[in-house]
Image (cartoon, rainbow, N blue to C red; front, side, top):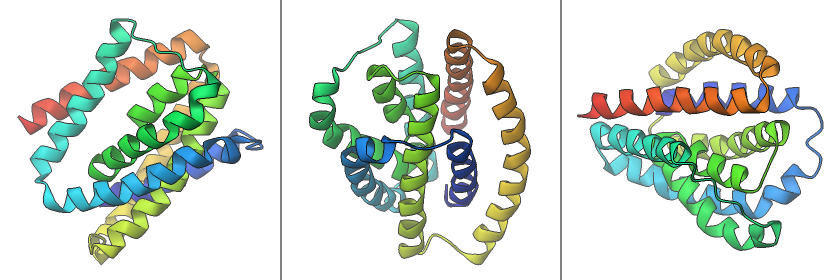
Length: 201
């Protein structure tokens, strides 16, 4: 988990830059991100205590649950008047999941979709949220002594490899319409979730 934080930070920074001016995104997401950061600290502490197998199983199950909700057309909608009220519970859940699994994206994705964000706003919000959360996670990992010199070197190598795949991914993203974009994300998550659960079992 620790070796993936630096590649995530680099890619999220590039993704956010590609979306142009952030506009009111930081102000809108501020309450959510405060609680996500708190949850990240708690989740990283749990990461220290849990086994690698348990972490993998939790992540796989969480991803598959999201895919299942999508397949049964579970598509909640949240009125923007409720947004600030939901910021605390959604942020805490996302932060704890991110701290444990390095993947806070599933609860955040469900929440942003529920708010009715279009593709561009969705990508901008995810990238900005991840950039903030991953920076906190990097500091927390260092605090708990989970960032050794070897992990940092491996992380640099993973960053180079990830940038190649990232370049291909953003080209594909730009060519997809909203419906195809949603379907592609769902298929990717389904494959990832099955692989993680099988690996843990």
